[in-house]
Length: 69
Image 1 (cartoon, rainbow, N blue to C red):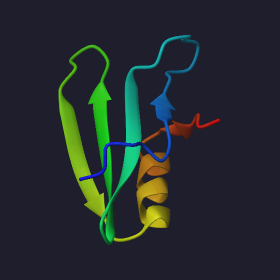
Image 2 (image 1 turned 60 degrees about the vertical axis):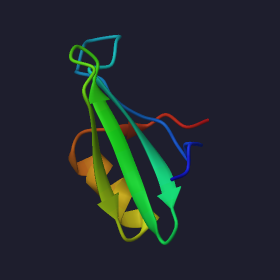
Image 3 (image 1 turned 45 degrees about the vertical axis):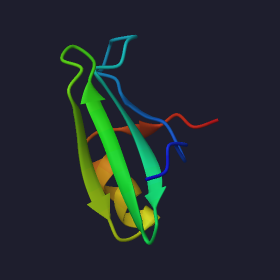
């Protein structure tokens, strides 16, 4: 399991300055794992994808925006 995130994604509600959720993508061997958590709750959840593109598409569909620099 890789501990260095490939990217940083945030979900910020319209009109707000703080994110309600944060997500990161990690490379796990031949797959990609997205870990995300709701800021108010702090519970980390994970989902695995076969490609990085699939992981990014899912994040976008969930309302996350890429804030990687």
